[in-house]
Length: 233
Image 1 (cartoon, rainbow, N blue to C red):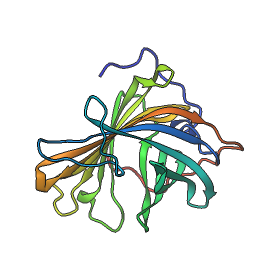
Image 2 (cartoon, one colour; image 1 turned 90 degrees about the horizontal axis):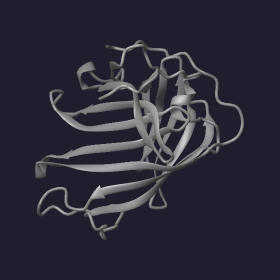
Image 3 (spheres, helix red, strand yellow; image 1 turned 90 degrees about the vertical axis):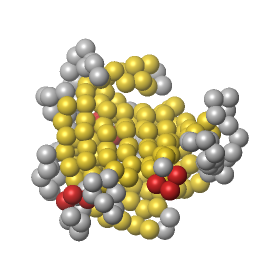
């Protein structure tokens, strides 16, 4: 990784999310391999027709639909269907998720899970997070690099790369999946690569999401909250 030419000047942690105003909307291209390994074929939201390179493709939309006490509620639609919701806050330590909902199941993070750290002077930083109801070794591990030049819909811009490693629920020595996120201040997440292991097939599923457009909402950005738990380096 090669640092961007100049350090970034970020006025608020909210910049790392792009915006947390109601109505802000991100539209993304989504792709996944139809055959992640020989003989194993999958579908993406029922889609089985591939492009010439063998990828399944669809569209995802993220939209902030409400400002709740738990944070800005972002509904995530893929192939036109609501798949999940996230509640996000901006804190003095960075961007954190307080709650998520998927498949009729809701989970509250105690404490909120810091997913993007407020940038430090060093090019690389790392932290760990675990819910208070689980053992520390089963928490998520994060690393963040930057500033780096990141691809956006309008060309390259300086930003950050965040790698989240998700620990296996049964064995803390194993990684069940990972999420690589490319962040550009003022836009938020412009690219993600979500990798999830499929143990019975000894392979992994990869879903990539790339931003195509962003529309800002209206109103004032939410107040910056104080992060209530210290980070475990």
